[in-house]
Image (cartoon, rainbow, N blue to C red; front, side, top):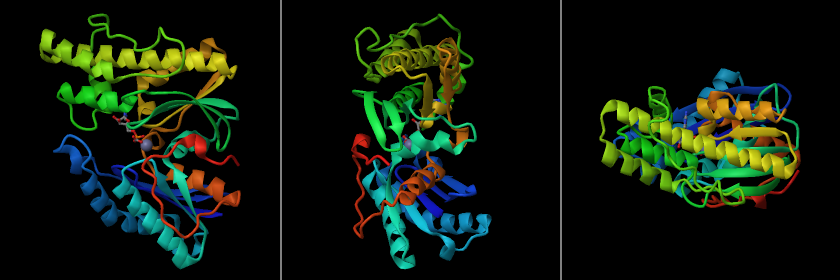
Length: 337
Ligand code: KG4
Ligand code: ZN
């Protein structure tokens, strides 16, 4: 089955073609970072307008590079949520309308399910069950995954997501938007042990996270220590260590609690080298395995949406004719396949 995937939940237009036999045929991502940079964050109205301009040309490009015509597409998967309502509406309307015009089934995909299943696009993919750490700009979740759609939420952030904490701290260190990757780069110049940030909520039982205090801690450190380049790098280092350490501690706890020794990390922050390194070390001591998608499938993309949608379409799931973006959507409501 040839599935077209459309991702427009935030500030990336992602389009992909996934074939259930041959795998991923083509994918393209257009990032709006430059558009939002001068505002220091995503401007929802600008995001929607840009998705309107980019989605159809990108679909044409992806079809061309895969050597396929629109008539050969057998199903359409689009991100229906969670995300910015106007941005979601663009992908959902284009996806649903194309489905109607071509008389082929469509499926509304949950953005975080897309992230969660992205490592399954790799040759070395995890078997079920596994524990997934989903770390993006909007979410931080630990999920027990027993199959596609069989998700138990083990813990989540009660305030800022990990990526959001990276972005906010990056902003106050004078790095651009989104600053997660830039902060990680700056941290490479940092001196260890100069500053020590707290590890929020690790001394309490449970698997929830809280990251909003870390940006305040970073701000207070800048206010007292100054903002010379080395100090900023040392703060970036200490901040990253605190986030990574906290995530590692909670992953270990989740694996112990579920008695599972396979860990998946996905979402934008899973591109972070320090996090990957520390989780790889953890899984070595636990004699387990860690899985993560390649870099381009960590951040938002159409491939993960085409893949997740393809699995659901092949299982016979279909949308009705209505177009229903869901800015808030609990992943545990999804139907298991
Ligand atoms: O999954 P994603 O592309 O979008 C959402 O669904 O939110 O994640 C974007 C987030 C941003 O907060 C970005 O700063 C963060 O992922 N990110 C990183 C790195 N690369 C991207 N955070 C830390 N280290 C990185 N290398
Ligand atoms: Zn995402």
